[in-house]
Length: 292
Image (cartoon, rainbow, N blue to C red):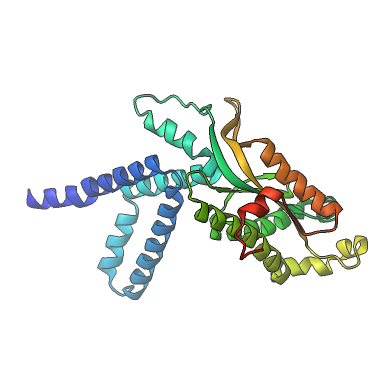
């Protein structure tokens, strides 16, 4: 009886309790699912290292192998992956949609058309210059090219507490820094981080060894003898409505506002003026004096 109770606790009850705790954390904050996935991955790596050091202990390796195939362990990891995919697909703009549907535990009905909410934020647009020509030359490899640029843009913006929202037309990226409820000093810091993130993106694109290979691409060099991967930026701040756009067949979690359009137009104007970035007057006033 004692042995049975111990096995029931270790193999069933304890894993189920862990699953419920993680589900509750994802329900409260859907974006936390990505952190859970990272933690799970690191724990799995440590476990593999320990098993590698003890590879001569057959019994320990057998027990580990058995635990790996337990249904509760598979269920736990699957739920973490599903939560991470939801957070990755919807982003910060879609967090409210996930929360709304996960709170309705009495019904299996999915309701993605949740009313939007007003937010105040910094909106940044980033666009790859000469993208049309790059698409003509690279053909199917343009997907790799866009993903390589996306990795730099999204990674740096995330480091500076920005939330990558969507990619428009394959070459334009919308990034959002939310400010509602922040005190004036913190709002200025958020604006500074938005500007500095675009500065760091420009530097990293120039330094990237991966993107440097396109400088010697024969097709690109034929069209642009001194081709370099360059990006243009536009920054503006103001209000927007955050929520789901679409229908029951397909939705996008994004932002609707004239202020978002202003950021896009600033980025387009920066290319026409031969500049790498344009900031609106409101954005300049929001930044701290030390930055400017």
